[in-house]
Length: 200
Image 1 (cartoon, rainbow, N blue to C red):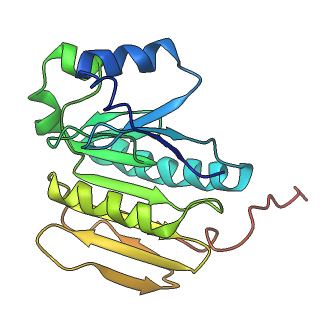
Image 2 (cartoon, one colour; image 1 turned 30 degrees about the vertical axis):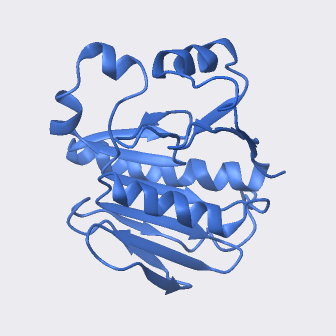
């Protein structure tokens, strides 16, 4: 199922506080909001995409616990970008110094910043172009490194600050480069169906 976009501008322009309260009052619905103020209702993902997303977050969290360089966020986290959009990447990471610049109240609500690193994982129902537009939006709002993972084509689109997008064909490993020093993610299990081998 594709995302649903609602343009409320002829009737109302939601403030940041009103959008926050809308999300709090409807916790079973995942909302995003673009820079134009349109509401985007995000559908839930299937089991295969959900398992892959959990693996990505786990790898990132294990690295971050070892280095303690920042904080890892799941797809349930909504960030308020500098351009006014509210976005929820499938996985995100924020450097500790930037996080500590926020007030306790800002940390509890929708953090008013763009993550340093994001992952967007394309599911079977996702169109590629909206995800590419979202990745470009992250870049324009301060993203340092981003991965758009496209299992259907076995491609990774890598987005770096102040550099052109690069496309990797069927890579085995991704590097966190200078943004996530020492972080490497194996993609061996990402390309195939999600399977659990039985215990001997």
